[in-house]
Length: 144
Image 1 (cartoon, helix red, strand yellow):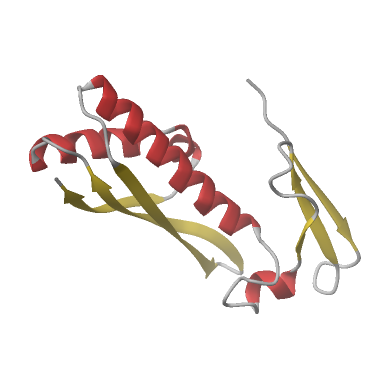
Image 2 (tube, rainbow, N blue to C red):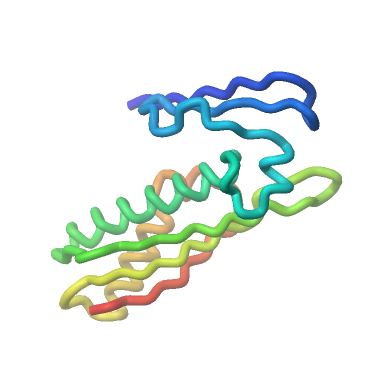
């Protein structure tokens, strides 16, 4: 399986701007720029690479968790994941140093211990977790 994304950038790094488009069209020429990336705290005027990575990680982890729960004989009523990515300035540049996955899940008839085992395994095993070179933490709340 191959998936694609496209970026178009026009102008200088600080004053220029661009668009991001996904193969599926879910993002179609979504605007992004340095100003939108670093000065638009609410993130509602455009997107940025970090937001897309956080969203991809949340989605990948939720799907991986659902699959692993199924393998163990459980079906979640709902899996809700928020991913909080930390982009920090270091050594004159920027780095993604940490992503915190905050999970709220409703899974009938599963013990806390079994859920923790499966959730942590899914965190380690999801493809997006594997590609990221940063600390990944998981906090969860299980609703039975």
